[in-house]
Image (cartoon, rainbow, N blue to C red; front, side):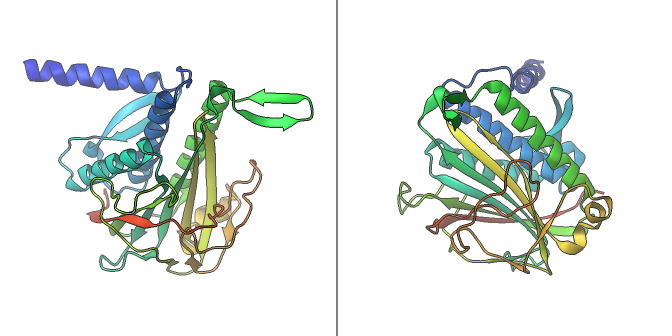
Length: 298
């Protein structure tokens, strides 16, 4: 009985935490960090759920505003889902230390070749010390400060666009393999740093099977963090989007260069829905590499 009560109490607390996600002012770095962590969990959970990677019972249902969301459970029967949760914990460690620059999730068919993918998901992080009074727009005598309402609108838009994109990609093969790679800011990250659950890797290239189509899902900004989300898929897997003209696509060569290997390019304006991320001028050291094979949910 005590165990059941503890589980119910924990579930009630988690539900309240998600319900209040957009109702807290992000006035401290710690509050901002918690918010960004939850948005990363929400995005990764939504991607794996809508792409049918793990079974239904690997997720719990939560509500955010008028959105029904699925969140990966920390303790479930799916070994693969539990592994993803552990990887996210490693990401949190790097986020807390402000080392993490990019989280890259690759979906590939060959378990022995993690660099040839059919889909990829990129989360890029930036940090600022300016705090709640950070100006996000300055035009002569007009200044606008970032508010929680701005962050909320950007977050909801990002989630909705991610849902739309995931639901309109063609179905994945029955057997897929996941790889998570982390990239860091070299100027602040110790050479021997490796987050829990990750091993040292090399900075290599990511190749698509065919021509890659890149979508910039969106970005959100808090007074202390910036998160940008991008998705890339093999062109043959986006037929629904192309036929319905749901999102504009940016078709590129069959090779997607990894961070640090592409030329510096400006990001598109806020209303553009498809683009490749701006790449750093200095190649970040990739130290986190993990791979996972799972059968899709039927």
